[in-house]
Length: 207
Length: 381
Image: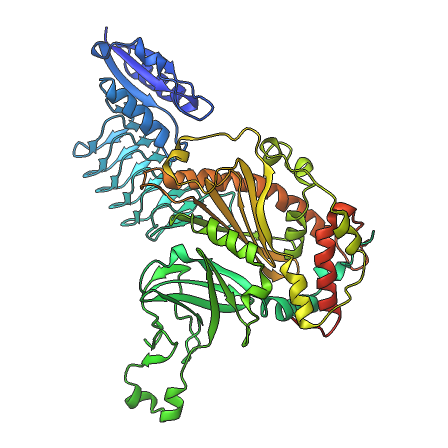
């Protein structure tokens, strides 16, 4: 029986583990929790006992630190020779022309339109709608029920929170967080954060 | 001992206007970061003491002008930070490095200014001073010498530390419901962190309130000398900086290796530049936060919060996340301050009790003595 190691931490690890387990009754799906040290570095010792030739891995760590921690875990898995595959929930509707990258998670009832490209390590939670010909770059985190219009581009490492929608044709720069529940109708400069705890957006300027 | 600050200093629109005129349109104020203006046509805009200001890079030279077009009073530059020539978007009047309307489309045909009127079209310019990477502006027609406001030691330390600032800058604005003076009374109060921040800042930094006996005694006396030069000399002591408290067990993170640390001491650094600039490094020079408190009304203050690390050794992908994590740290710690400051403001009314101060609050008393002299008399600085 093929092994499926779902590795990571937090609520998302549970979510991904159960999703894989229900979708693949023919596989030996196991949950591997990875702890962190005081400086937030991962303790990867749990990986040493696994043989990459005996199965495939799925990295399930949430959006913290702009999805860079999940990216770090994914890199650690690849460096050790583990094979990574995307997960697409059986109830999701993904157009056959859409391209789905490694370690992507597509949750229940998500819809991905024709011509879309979802790059590696991105998470589309349940109920996400991605309009036709959209591109979501690597290591993004799109929460439940988010609506993206057609031809939307979401830069790498972005977070789109519940209650947000992005109008057709809008480009969102890399490392943005769209956390104010509203429609985003204009281009969003890279590294802009809309966090509901703050009175104004958080901007980054660099030269 | 009773404070010299009656409640109306925090409530009165008339006092607010008086301090705008006698302090904010007279002294040198924080204007922005030079790191945001690295090349020709780079600019930043802001409202300072109610006046829209643009600071623009003209071939490496930084100039500050009133950001209002001389034609129809439109803002010339609209974005907070950007890079474009100094051209009004309304009717395309273009201004040069001296603030002169260098080009007006169809000037002769449509406007028909006479020579004198045409030559007089020049934006109001303000004095600008650069200390390391920190820009100061003075809105007065005849600015007081910068060195009369800030001591040589303060200027040298600010220059040294700010030269270490990185060019990637995170910034946001909070809308506080408190008078700007309350923020600085709080910042100069080393006795509050253990009560207001017991689970955040005070867990890692050992702030120890101390009594400066000489200052405490002196602060009881009335201000004897109130000439402009005396008041300026007095004001010079209100700005200070340096290591404020030790960090006994400084926690190190991976990104610390990616930046050129300023200094080597595991200390909490604070810089207070009177009247409304606070800079801190809560990790011994690996990163800095800059807080600019902008008075909006007697009970309203906009708090601009900046975060930047010390200069990066080389770019790294997650640098903005390092800044964001620290911004969220500010949200916690400064948020605790804001909560208590808004409560103080909310409790104020015309007949509220005058605060009772202790000996350790002598710096606040010294500044308040100067402030009261300025507000209650015709004295100017």
